[in-house]
Length: 419
Image (tube, rainbow, N blue to C red; front, top):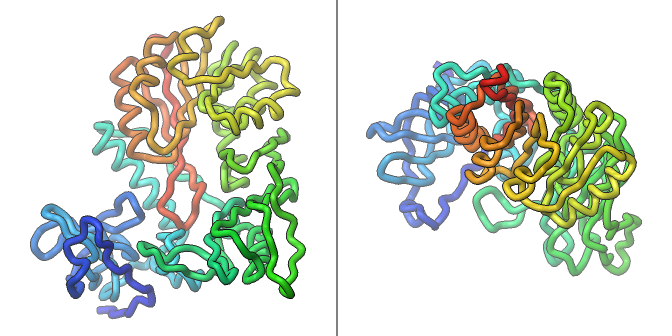
């Protein structure tokens, strides 16, 4: 038997909806048999309740301390590994377990991909009621470190820069983030203990352009000095030959290398349908539309965000066959003439509103390419679309966020009468 202490600080119980906040935490021994959303292993507590356990791996036997207790489940945090998984590794980051940014650094990367693939399959079975969902193996990164091109930091009054500790309101100084792009860490080093009169700091970099955006406009402490330009309204990035302006509040993928893979998948699935008209819904700054413009006769973008819309106007100006429409998908899609053959949707984490699903089902769209950052809402929406007359062809998980709980997926659906 292997007995191994785990050098991960455990999370103090949250007072809200936590019956154990004012009591000593209870240790329990667990066999872990599954993997759940949030990056937690799953087992059964001694009393039979489901247990969701941080910093554990399916197949392990651990001692964990309960951090939250409800009538049907408990949440717990691993404090000792009695029988370790072969996939267990030493976390690379010194802040892992205290910082809440990563949940999976204790698992080797190959196993992370396998667990994420399995989780997507499980969500489609359990939530979407797909008996045998067509989920492919997750596409990972050759180097799953130093990828994150956008990070928001917390700044203390004394100028220290970091994050809030996991599950608390306590500050944690950070001097280097292992998943952050090198330029983000360079800015972090340059501003550490030198800023004043700001509580937040956002750093965004263009990996393929070298551009850097630092917000807000910073003020510097006397005698400390700094030479970091700040207050830029936007930065630029390139994906697969297209150039994008991205304003400070606008969304853009935080992993440039995997964003290029994602864009390639979307482009391939759209081209397979040979559309005359394609819609880029939830278009943001025009990421997909700019790439589709060279392949499709007519592209229409739908976006309601003013900040993203301003960027989209700049980014799509070179493409005469792209039409930009401001509004919601359910309002705009029914009135498009000519009607689209293919629609690409990339909604926020909450997924598609039911009205959007109904609008797509009522349209003559032949193919839907659905980009999702939440497997649970994806599973829900895919069930509605399939029940409404589409066939689910493929779900491709893509690891946009190595070492974290997050999973991106690209799904392809064809209308049954077009199959």
